[in-house]
Length: 84
Image 1 (cartoon, helix red, strand yellow):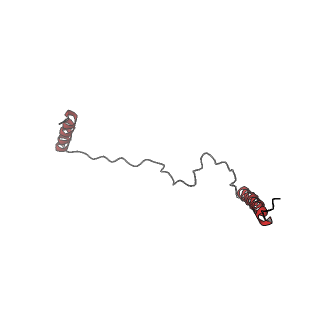
Image 2 (cartoon, one colour):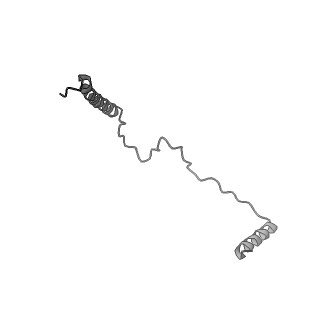
Image 3 (cartoon, rainbow, N blue to C red):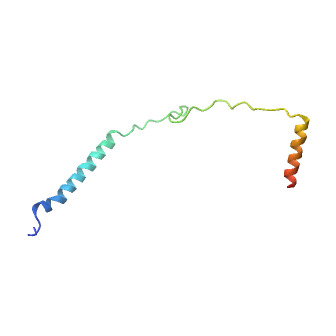
């Protein structure tokens, strides 16, 4: 033991190392204790965190166009295709 080092300076790193080992041991025990049980989910069972999905698609909406609207739409499509 060096003469210029006190007993407290020698015990400091030992106490810190012991505290670190105890902390890691306690943390591992806590993680092991509260580990979720590995339960297999049935294939037909929905996931608990997701909202319920619709079983059917929404109804389609259809609107009948008047002949004037059909002509206007055809003119718009023609203008878009020609690039003017």
